[in-house]
Amino acid sequence: MRRFFYDISNNISDERGLLHPQLSTLPIGANVELTESITHHWCRVLRANIGDQGILFDGFGGEYQVQLQTISKKHATVTLLAHINTDRSTSMFTKIGLVMSRGERMDYAIQKSTELGVTAIQLLSSHHGEVNLKPAQVEKKLAHWQQVAIAACEQCGLNRPPLIIAPVSINDWLQGSATHSSDSQMDVSPPTVSPIVTTLSQDPYYQILQQPADLRMQLSVPAAGQPAIPKSLPELLKQQSPYIELLIGPEGGLSVDECQQAANVGFEPWQIGSRILRTETAPVVALATLQALSH
Image (cartoon, rainbow, N blue to C red; front, side, top):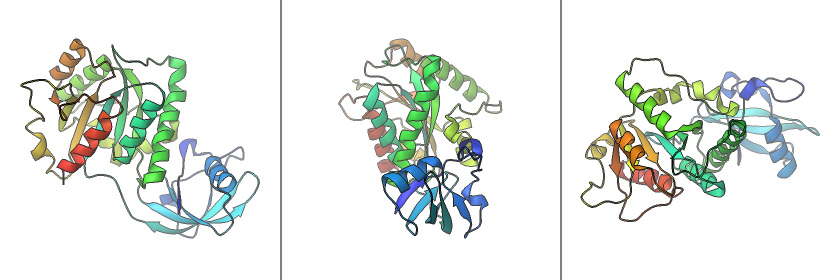
């Protein structure tokens, strides 16, 4: 069955001002007004008909089997048939600090990281990075990359989209990490995300992102005499729900100062094999390796 993310951002569906509640607030058998994007894709592009069934998920847990009831020129409604209480999230929480790259390489990194269960991606700019967004570009790019993640969820079956967090400089992010880790009792501002997931980001599932990570690792260029993985990683992966932060630099690598700053706030080097990975490949290999080591 076709799967669609049911966007409740701004709680408004269309020009008629119809509200989009969380699916979990509605009883089975209730009729739901589809968002404009779902209506267009399912009913116009895919040419669905009344009586066809599909899956909706809003990111708050589980998914709903639905059946099309009405279709008009711009609008459609479905009936909630059943709630499927399934969560395909991985057993660990992972946040990637990812220096932005250009075009399809960035889309690929986000798409595949989503399929591999990443919890959040913090967008970064760095000294050797290719991309430095102007303030006017941030909202549009953030919405695009969040949609890339959501589309990957629709395809792979993940019911909780990763949060794509607005870009900051790597220096500012690492300084914030230092402050956060030195005082775990301090108030931490919620992440700046696209309006698509602003409400969703407040769900308890994502609150672990406000806490210090159990382990921080920087994917590093292979170097002689450097340990392949942090000594604490194998034991950490035996825990029920470990929280791991990864730092991945740009094609040109992090500068010496950035590497030192990362080390100063607890990022340990992690070498995956003897080859140098591209910036869009590194998240995929890192997340897949963590999952393999945890089983």
